[in-house]
Image (cartoon, rainbow, N blue to C red; front, side, top):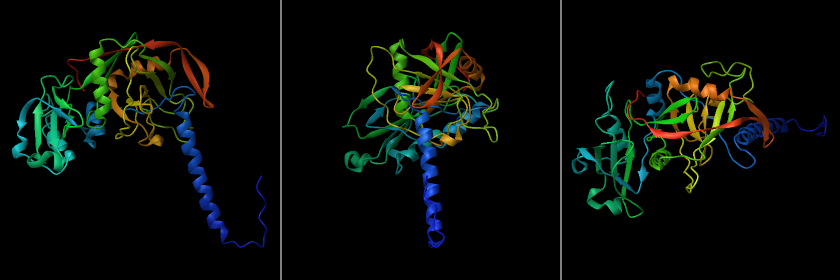
Length: 332
């Protein structure tokens, strides 16, 4: 218990005391949010998703334009870099995105390759090659490694870049965001080649309770959990060595968002808009709105209470296995 201030002490310390109290409050809130997203033996995250139509998905990732360094993707050229130059990889990325303005059908450009290392690129510095893949979920790779001076990225247009998480309760179709989380998406594409995902599962499930409405909006004066409105699992396949994924952040956490917990392989699908988490997690995709009822069904399966790092959580009595699959045709 703090000492009662003496009346004769100068009042000039009052503003400083208020400032310190404000900083302490912010620290407590931050520590609580961080703790909620970590377990004793495993870390976990909760993210909000995308409600509404497919255009909402595009807007959500529209602000991002990232690629992978030291990677050269191949493909049929639709713009020759020798005659098409920019000062940054982001400008090259946006030039590719600009070719996805149609309301239907695939993008005219789905791959961009930029040479941004002035010393290594020499006369090729600034070249922006725009290309087209035969299969956007299996892009052709020319070369990769530290000696490669190119930066490459993918753009998934309408109906493209969809993968499925198959469960006994239905398949969750997920639109991937390679322009926001290129390294995360690269890992997901590698999983597609494994043809199995033994060990991949959902093991935690918490509904929206009385905290968020059916659209994922937070109700006034309600707490922020528990429950935390999410289903959580892992995408680490048994028999494979998981390499940590660099943190990539871009979209806000909203209903339907699919995000890593830390650097993976733990991940979660949010059932609510968690704007209070801001851009704390790597969002690499979003469940298509019509499939959110499957996520809700999993969230209401029987659970048992547990405590992780002094936080009350709900663990599924029976984990839900999942398989990852490529979706050839879909409406994203």
